[in-house]
Length: 339
Image (cartoon, rainbow, N blue to C red; front, side, top):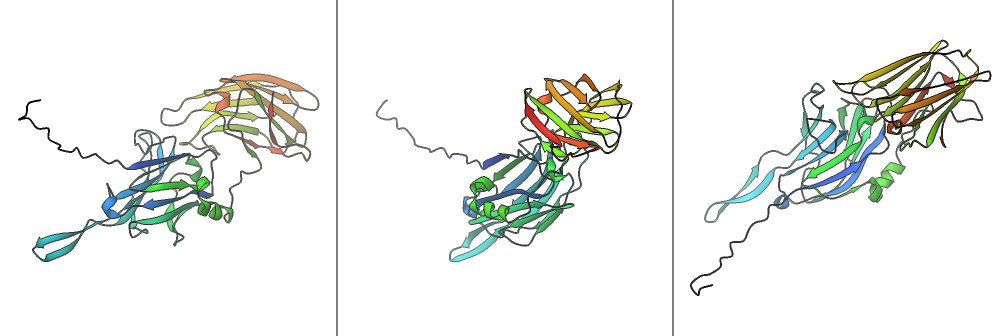
């Protein structure tokens, strides 16, 4: 280059982005600790958006209104604080905005809005601190605890078991979920543990090489066997029914149903020749390949076999639920056997 040309170092300021922390919830819960984590809230001068969010989500890894459900969203907003020079030797302290916490639930486009947000004072109160957050679920409310403080209560809009993904984002650092937090482990060990009812079994992940075997004594008709995806009970908005099998004394009614406003369903009604009576032992075997689900009914006197084409693959089943049978002492009510 010529001697009269100089390169200028203007310096390009890098745009800072806030962080995102994601966690997939593998086992659904109706009660107990839904989420526990430790984190660091940076000092106000190091914040970018002056807020962070905790998102408990269903069928989405982001709180996006076009799909999925934001079961619970907590937004912690921090007021900016800074000194401002008015004139020489005259400095004032200015607080910008408000510090608050917002709690909300939102459905996707398929669902009606689940009520407006609730505004509370920000329980964290200051920046540049370490925090521990625990979200408990009870029958009607979430109980939210920050650093062991008093519970913040929020009424369920969707059942807690709908939560299958967590995303934390914004001005928050060093998030450690329960598996990496000794403090969370201590809290969990001293808390009520969620247990499925005895008539349910978690089978996720299920493969085409596995058979679901149900053995019991008939207590009432119909005998219902339900294969659920993304749910631990039937719900008109959440989860899908891979297979709903209803065995009566005369026939078998089978249904598969997807969710949402554009839900699809398929059904089948099959007569059978079995002589079924209350108090008698029965065994039901289910196995599948892709959407084809075969079943066998075995009694002391007879057998019956058939198949059903579901809307979803057999392997999409997460939970199996049984009604109408009592457990026989020497057998599991629901068992998973590899072929």
